[in-house]
Length: 137
Image (cartoon, rainbow, N blue to C red; front, side, top):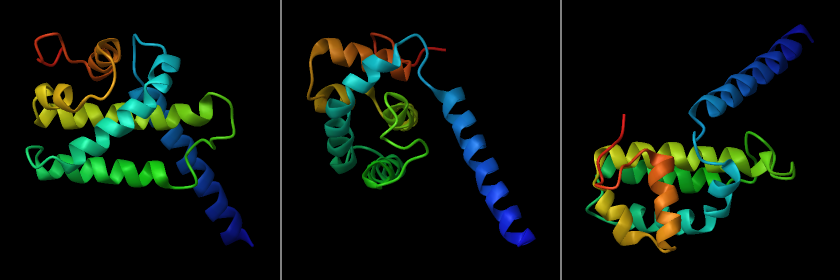
């Protein structure tokens, strides 16, 4: 019985650490609601980038793992919780996109972007990419 309680407390502790990690890597300067509205376009972008052979293999693996995470029926924060339920998905997507853009050109993101120019501007802000395609501090 003590082992079961220990395991459960460990899992709860791990879950809290993961939530704290999501909080720390969340997008800054852009409302999370705006990122949530872009999620359908961003999912199409991620799928297109994952299939593009010009994207380095390590980045494509991260994109495929991201798609797998998003397809799982469970999340760090359950989706039935209003706003917060989808916030973890948006934060993880932003985090992976930032890491992919570090190793590839933002031109590929522009080429595959299925949404509006305003939406692409938000993606630039979320990923920390300036107008010229260079990473901002």
